Figure 1 (cartoon, rainbow, N blue to C red):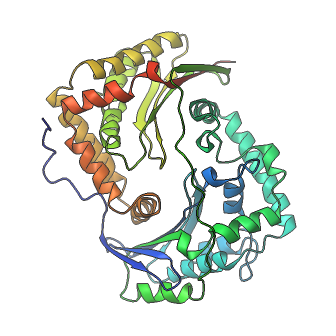
Figure 2 (figure 1 turned 135 degrees about the vertical axis):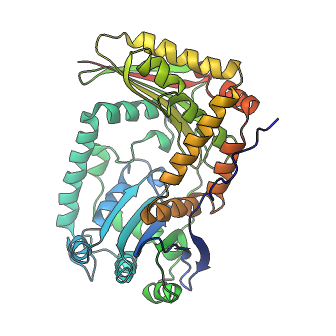
Length: 423
């Protein structure tokens, strides 16, 4: 039996959504929302760390950096200076599945974002000196991540979980691979994949009636085609529980990673609700067992990501000094086994649903966040994916959650436990 979801649940995507495709082939999504005189743009390219050829790890992230280092129209640093001078903000990120660039401006000046994005799509300067300089910046960024205990532990655990699959490689790349990436390599990657028909542009906020015409004008003439995104099989996770241990930092940390379905698969919604029941709020199972009552950990977390080919369910714990990490691990495994053995009580389920809803609403409180949620969905799945995911999470009843826990939250069937112990 499926327990009814709470009444009055919000739509998964905020705003009034319009879909278009420009003459240049760019997929366009308008999210009209007049809650504030702000407009945010998010341009997603369907290219990321998973698409890099062997020996070229980090090229997608390297190119993301270079997109701010000069075009025919904007010199090095000018994009940032112009954005700040106009009172806006901008940034970018690269994942295994996509690369995204976003801006936020007052509603009367947002079209400058279109000018910048169209110019970057037409071509980059990719000056050899800038490439050398930015390569060193990224090498230092890699070192910084390796110096941070949680980041380093996560990288090692995911590498063990996904093995030789590109999902197991760090998005930042490896320093030795970066040495082989020059302006020619970056230009070829840009020419192949930074084109209108490989992108999704979301414009969200206080939009006028001429938004589509402005986008058409900015990207006019950009109609080049390129290669189809390389096909990639899903990763094959381990069929047993793997363990790794490292020495880093001043306190012990534990990270459990389990393979779960991709972001468009029907079981993922219920798994997200299980993450809430485990670690969201002071009354959640792990929070009580390890922090509030058990006094074994400083903090705990749990949840499922949304990868395209596969996702990862993680449980993390920062152990208090003097506490044996083995006891923390035992308690975590016991809570997972309990979820698989007995249905969740209705009161706990109702509380978990409300927390999930509150987090979902908070995640789209700002125009900028609305643009990113819609852009990620359209680029990686489709615009209906967030609604399906939310509906699946809210519809999962006690027996369904028990089934999901039994099937997926069983470390002995395959997963990785990583320990980062004090030096």
